[in-house]
Length: 534
Image (cartoon, rainbow, N blue to C red):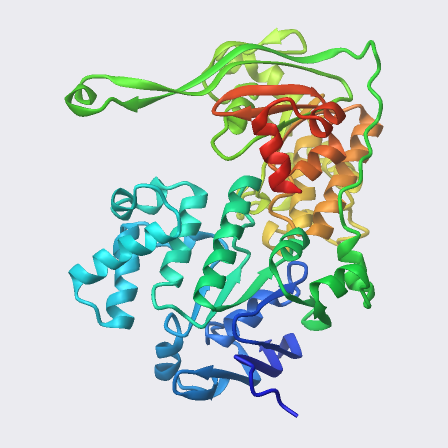
C-alpha cells in the first residue's frame, strides 16, 4: 500500500542508452523535508537517476514512474510533456550541479543569472528580480552581496560559485533540491560551510534534498536515509545509522571499508636530500586601487618565506584551504613559475633557463588533480606516456621507447594483459582511476627521484582513490620515491605522509611529524582544519 505522504516516489525506473541499461528498475521515495543520499561509485547511475527525473537525459530511453506531489496535485514526471516539465524545473524541483564553473554561464554576471530565473519562473520585473537576486546571494552567506552580484563566475572562489549555484536553485523556493556532488571540488573547511548552509536552508525552508555523492563522510553528517547504488541498481536502503553500523550488502561494506590506510616506509637516517627550499616567495602582480593602477601594479604574495626539506623515500604533505598557497609552492618546486629564494633539486638549483634546467625536470615529475584534463584527448596512451622520453631520451629507438612505455604500464597495473591494445587507446576509453594510473605511468617513465602529487585522489570516488593510494604507497616502497603531496584531505595526509606543512594565506603556520601535528595541533588554523574533517 502506498504511503500518501511521499513527496517523490520512484518506481521501476529504467534508463537505457542505445539499448544498454544504465539504471535498472530502481525504487525509492523521499518524504517532505527529508534528506536522502544516493551513494555509489562513478558509473553506478546516481547522476543519471537524478537527471532522468527532470527529463535531462538526452537520447535516453526512460521508463517507470516518478510520482511527484506538485502544487497542482500528483504528477508522473516521466510521463509529462516537455512544456509541463519545464514548468516544474526550477520551480518545484531545482538542481545544484557538481561543477559550478561549467554550470554557470561565463559571460553573464552571477546576479543576472539568478535574476533570469526569477523573471522566467516568478514573472518579476527586472528591478524586482535584481533586488531579489542580491537578497538570495546574501542568504547563502556570500560577503558583500551587491558587489558579488555584479561579478562573473571566474571572479569568485570555488565556494562562492557553489553558493551562487545554491542561490539560483533556491530562487523559487523548490519543494525538492537535487544536489549532485555539491562539495566534491571544495576543500574541507569550505565543504563544511556548504554542508552547514544546505542543512540550515533545508531546515528553514522545509524542502527535501536528494544528495548525490560518493563521499560517505558527507552522508554521515548530512543525510537522514541512504540508498546505495551499484551498477545501476539500488542494493541497499535504510537510515544512515543502520547502513553505517550494520550494512547488509557486500558492496556497502566495501564502500565503508574504502578508507585510506596508513602505510609509510621508514626513512633512512642517511637518506640523501632531494629537495631543499629556502625562503621561497611567489608573487603575482595586482592592480592598485584608483588612478594609481593605471601606472603601476602592486604585489600579491601567494607564498611567503617558505622553507622545507625532502629526502629520498619520504612523503611531505602540504595541507591547507584553497588559496593558501599550496599549488603556488608546488609550481615553484617544479620550476614552473618565477619565485624568489632557492629551490635545489639534488643539490642543483633551478636557473630559470630551459636548456640548463632540462636535467632537473627529469628528476622531478608531477601528477595533477584531474587526469581527464591533464591528459591530451588527441594522443594515444603510447604517445602520452612516452612523451617525456622524446625530450629527455631522444636517442631511444622506436622499439626501445615502446618497450619502456609497456614496462611502466605493467608497473601501474595497465598492461596489455589487463587492457588489450592499451598502447593504441585514448584517455576517454578509461575510468577516472585508470586515467590517474596513466598519469602516474607518464611521470614514472623517466625514473624520477621526486614526484609532486597535486590532489591525486580528490577527483576519484572512494574505492578508486584507495586503489591509487595503494599504488603510490607500493611504488614508494619499491623505488624509494619521494613525494611532495598537496591535498586538502587530512585522511590522505594520515595515510601517506611522514611530515606535514600547514599553509594559510601563503605562509607555513605549522610543520612537523604527521602524528605530532595531527594529534596535537599547535596552531588554531590546524585545529580548525582537523575539526572540519572530523
